[in-house]
Image (cartoon, rainbow, N blue to C red):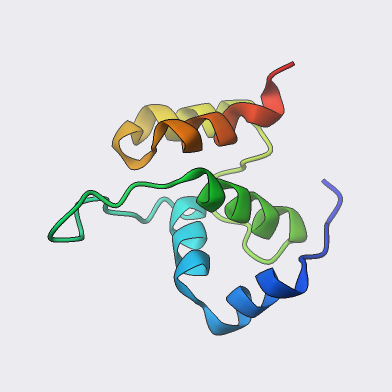
Length: 98
């Protein structure tokens, strides 16, 4: 997989380890609890999947899950269906559809 550079705004998120970065790393490392918030269920959104994929493609966070591999991405959905919104499921599988 060819490494890609991140845009400056995304690099700021990486350098400051902001909430978007933490969510993306949680997705890549399968370290997430959607019920961790007391008021609502905190599921991944499409932007989380896109950011996680960009982090992985840039080589910054390899993670436990290869989002560039259909089997790996699908197994993630099967193991943790409660983690994903409908939009994030589509974003996760979008590179593998025609």
